Length: 227
Image (cartoon, rainbow, N blue to C red):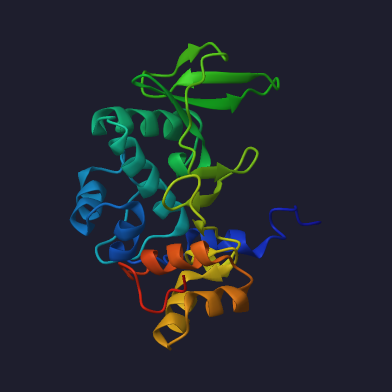
């Protein structure tokens, strides 16, 4: 039997592998580690089940990131839970926030799906799946990029314009800048190289290198930053 295109993409096998420590995931989502633990403890309608001290998979990381983004957008945990539970039950998704793109309009969360007939439908996921006009589409969570009818394959960690991304197809899902993991940039910096030297070696611009260093905890105006 011929393998499908998705089955021939080895990075997809890594989507379910526990790879991110709770502290790392909290840092990336800009919440506390205690918050991550608490959200997983509430119930499996908010986030998928995770054993104590177990790392998060890529799909679990994206779900955490979406919940954190929605909380920052002033959605309540009740509304977020209702949206996730609707998609999980009615669209048969184990990781709704990682597998469906959610959009917002006011205090409503929308997601789009395709019927067997091929027609596209937009529903209010946090209001029991009420149908909505396709024209009513509010701003999306722009830091997440989704495949066509697939998972979130790229997360811009500090907003849509951020050069720092997590992409399961690149560097095994480590935070990176144009394919270069941020931890490698930090390692070169710790070894004494300047930002311009690092940028030249990895074909990056200096501002991107500085963003990576800030992400890795280098603060202030470093003496190794060129002017």
